[in-house]
Length: 344
Image (cartoon, rainbow, N blue to C red; front, side, top):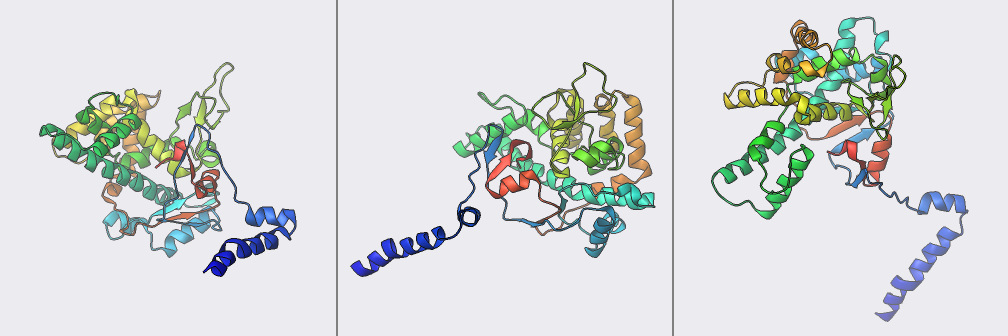
């Protein structure tokens, strides 16, 4: 027994150490030293999801992406008709060379196919939170006390959605915020704000929704026509998924869209569909163009039959397939570190 203990605790470890140390320092550093990433205040520790598969070798150009979608039987008309579920494909960047596609129908189809899974997955996560929130709201309405873990979760959600988490949390007010955005509306606004994914801001920074930032710490792109003394930039994102999630969170939290949230809650109360054509009427504040912007979004939804995608469903397979070069955020995530802007 003592001989076995000596073998396991002294002899074998020493042999491994000597073997590693006998190599050059350069090789040893690469092969045996694990990197240590220390998160700054904007980072949080969170392990990578086991339901994600990443292919970094995929080339993100328009033609290759269209071919990939076709090989996966991912066809727009089949999704419109409800024949096909939407695959959980996540591109790390918008496809390049979209303007080189001769057919405008192909450009639009590529844009819709790229964004559709991202919008549906974002809404899916919100629906999961909303369902739990509805149950807790019913418990509170029945005069029962919430379990400690439910109170903690409720406080976290309230903070995330910009409500006061001190004291008793207003679950009715929170339900107005924790809700989905119609796919048709999200597609139409992205199409308008990014030129169907071809704008400089979209191609260079995955800026799909024209969100501005005045914060020096945010990554952003300076508009070419910005006047002297102005500091605003178009907020950029590591990937299109981050842009979609930020847009939905913006509608669900910013005071400028309180009417949007009230109108959506009213539709819920009346047991009516969450209709993009109706809700866009409450988004005049989204653009300085006001009502002209609202008319443009409404026209985009109608002319392109985007309301068909409000009925689209994700594939039952929970595996997300990430395609494209690895982003800074993904490399950090491999080591359990996720930028705050990309928390799920």
